[in-house]
Image (cartoon, rainbow, N blue to C red; front, side):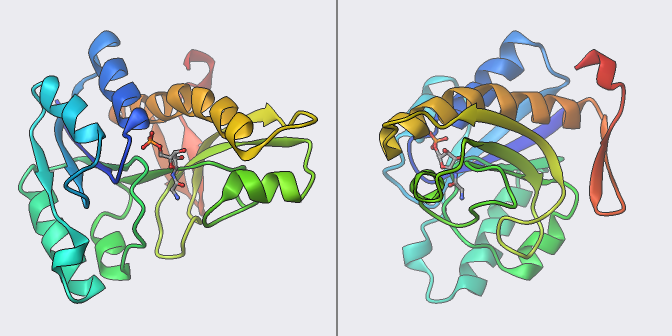
Length: 205
Ligand code: GAR
């Protein structure tokens, strides 16, 4: 049974999708904890209602990024994680933190990386007049929104799309993509090879 720790900063809809999939698909894994850097993150309520331990490590309480990340790491490691999942966790992480979780730290980013790293990805996509947008699950490395890609999903950008309509279309797909990627991880089907990700038994996804 693998332990998954999920980090959130707000709404937590991706966390919710992961919790539901872990239960309904009977993964060989449990959600060991949901941790937020914000005490008022909405997603904490869902986790608590589902009997999942929660913790808050508020970045505003720490004078430096290093001190915050060190405390966050201590709290996460208290749950003995096999995998740490960033689900709308809106913090840039320091290199020592990322290196500590190398190969067991996943992120979902709302764009087709390497396109549109950073913030406001949906507006970036509209401004760039791309025909397709989407989301990416990747292993986290010290460079923001880089790191080996596990899976991506594409959605069309439609005439008249706004940031709201496009982000809603992407989010529906995120809720399928992230559980899929995490299931592959807990089934030991992901390996990082030469800077890319190899998925075992792709016929059976
Ligand atoms: C999601 O769209 C996720 O991809 C994005 O924040 C949203 C969180 O929503 N993450 C990032 O932009 C990370 N750079 P949620 O809290 O409802 O899962």
